[in-house]
Image (cartoon, rainbow, N blue to C red):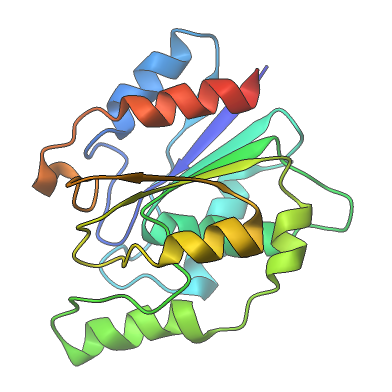
Length: 191
């Protein structure tokens, strides 16, 4: 059976935004879907999020697909980096993912949290070798994730890049309770 694990973002929950909609759509197509609640979501750290995600995924294989939103993309990338040589997942969808510094952070504490994720070294060749395919989706007016991140996902991870107009951060704050492009691209990856 094909499995999908969805990683929410900073301050996120499994019940927010388009995650419940995507879960329902995928389950109707016979996917097994998990949306784990990642720990300490108001102050996400690599040392807590990546092991929690790994625990939720269990044993990955090429029928395992990962979907991340914002900080969830970073957690997925760091999880993939830690997989043993030769182990792959079927693919990943990164929505508002980032490798560059976040913008629009309001406090020194937020800036420090963001820096932990963007300044801790990453072996992106390793990550790329553990993905059969990936898609990265960005908005041209995201207040936190600059669209320039698209270049990194394309060049360093080999992701298919989609840039949408005026979609903000693809979350409820911007009116998103469904995100059909994610379903469409996930079904393509899993085909």
